[in-house]
Image (cartoon, rainbow, N blue to C red; front, side, top):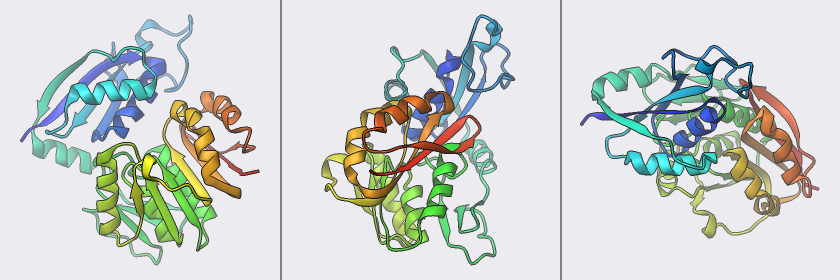
Length: 296
């Protein structure tokens, strides 16, 4: 069965948020290009358009790969809502031969080392010769492969923080990569929460494949508790709305790491969490920032 291709144009300032929201909906890949030139934009990818910005840079084209069974209309509507777009953008649907996209998609992913303590390895790759634990994943089933800057920043945080025995919560688990990584690093109890039933299913499957135990559930089924470490790799707007809940789930003295935040959005997220945390930027990667801090 042929895979679906999706193309849509958005304002340059909205391109990254829409791209990540589409990935959160479970699309396989998103490529951002200059909508007019048809080639990758040469301006900084996160710059706000101004009167000095050439017209050709003010619209970006997103080329998206969807699995055959996915509903493009539903995916675009949900992604637009998550990205804060007032109106879902118009889009065009095409089809692409299965074998071509399998080869092209697999070529984008290679094993990733995290701080020398962990390896993220796609299932079709031979594992590296290393004593560090491995997380085996298939990219594209849900957001989170270890290659996106926002995911990589949280993985690096976990590699620094987890020493064994912690209670960890991954809020917005996607593929389960962060929760599984926490388990591999030695956390004793790990919760994995997501609003998307498909993400919960994928997380549970990936946990079984990696032989780790996770408490996988929807947010309304999550028992309130004091977690030692809470991570959330979502987007800035949902993170701001979730601030009271996430604060309540972190024990006094516990650590919090937030990702999915553009550098220009960091101050708003810091302000939302100020009642419970003194957050600061501890990592930067390709225009994205990791915010972390300790619960008061």
